[in-house]
Amino acid sequence: MQRTYKTRSGTAGHARIMNTITEPAGAEPIRFDTKIAVLLRADLEPWQRLNVTSFLVSGLGTQIPEVIGAPYEDADGVPYLPMFRQPVLVFEATKETLTTAHTRALSRSLPRSVFTSDLFATGNDRDNRAAVRAVPTAELDLVGLAVYGPKNAVDKVVKGARMHP
Image 1: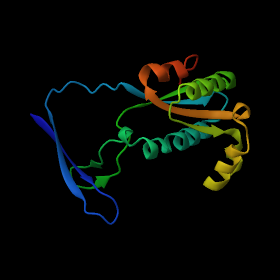
Image 2: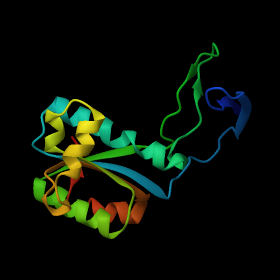
Image 3: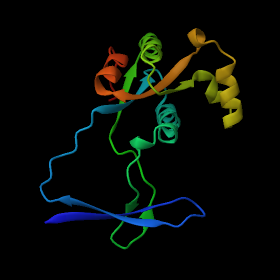
Image 4: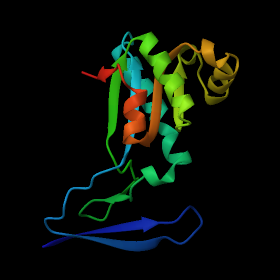
């Protein structure tokens, strides 16, 4: 038995093209040679952890479109937005480990996003960007970092952190 997925592609104002993706039954699990990791500072409140994670991963798909899978559709034909094509691993660490991870991500030129403690006091994207822009790299008070790249490089970036409980 084969599994068939119908996907729609296109943008607003353009025709939507229907694609069919067929996977053979019993197909081997998909393995990824890349990793998406989010590193959170361990002293964040639960609501902050969720908020920071959401913000951090939101930029990856806009800059790295290959991390986004095909759109979803339920059995009744109701379409849903596409999501990441691979898992997002969430880690936690001390402030010092997070700073070290940021330095490692920069030295490896990996795509990354940051969330600083200053962003909890802002209320919009313009002020968020201004808050980050106002602080030199070495002085950023990081509470979160998202990074994407080859598995081994991302593993080296998050070394010293532990999986989020």
